Image 1: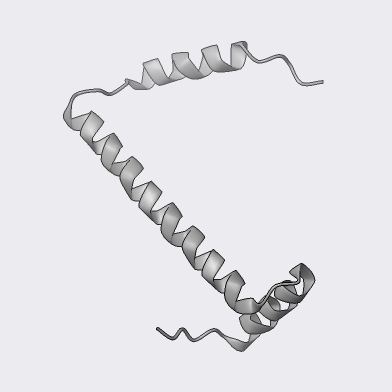
Image 2 (image 1 turned 180 degrees about the horizontal axis):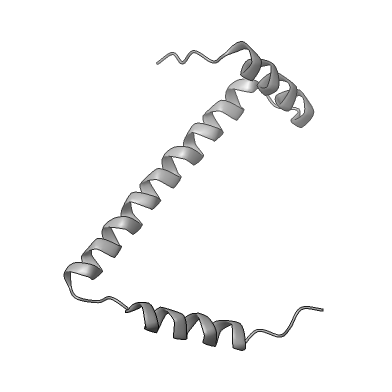
Length: 79
């Protein structure tokens, strides 16, 4: 598979690779891997959420508000 990368992005990639002491190809592979892994995770999470909705496992707007209030009440104030 070949991918066309715009010249300005190639320059950034080359610069970043040099700063990290790596080759540009390894950075591209890592970036694509991260994107694919994230997309797989995201789709799986959406499917889980949709399954919960189908099972009737939902929260009302008010229940969400109560949970958020409880969460922030349990946190110490920031200085």
